[in-house]
Length: 170
Image (cartoon, rainbow, N blue to C red; front, side):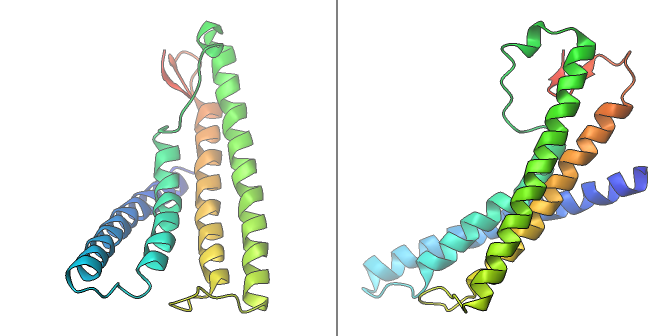
């Protein structure tokens, strides 16, 4: 089981690096677009679409590592007052709910991608198939769901004497 966790963690790290590369690409496209628009009086064709697609991919490629490192926002107004065991249970339940929701959203986004491919929907300037973009994001959401489920598994297997919870140190 630890090898599966290790593999997902490596994939998550690789996806986070990819997110950084996409962010650099978005920055370069933005810079080039501004220079071309104001310096050469000719806008970069498809620049807006490249940035739009890139921003979506940045979010979804970074999501699995963020989940594994517990970088998501957690409101602990009530849970700070819970006993340690109850905090561990709520952390486990929230990870299971998060994974289930990510899986459901991935499924729905995949189906929407199929519909977009069926209708040959493409972006206006670059003619990139919108269905492929949606299905790429659906696959990335599956990795996010797996990250949540692995966090839940770790929370379930955690030693009760360990004084950490899903939200971090007590």
